[in-house]
Length: 122
Image 1: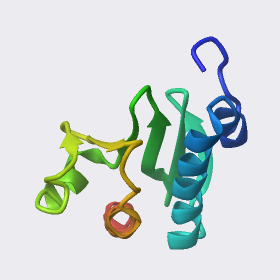
Image 2: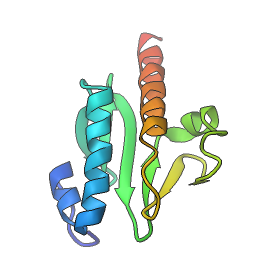
Image 3: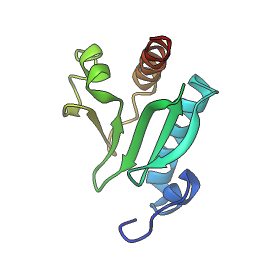
């Protein structure tokens, strides 16, 4: 997907091999199932979801992993549960050779949604 700038998440996902597409679709479905009001968008050329007017999460496919971006705040909140994954300040690397940690991702999505709600009320 280096030269093509996707206009939507369907176009983004279509640019990858079928096995990667399935993982990306699983994450997309998980976000929709967890926060049905989340709005799809493309931001920084990556699939993203907004909730209450703020970014909820981003995700993107790379050579050996899917990057899941839920901000440094969320990574800190789930630090222990994320210990088996490579993380950076706001990124979680989900390697292709491991199953996606769907329950953990669901908890992170819920955490971020609550955080967005609190920020909106302020």
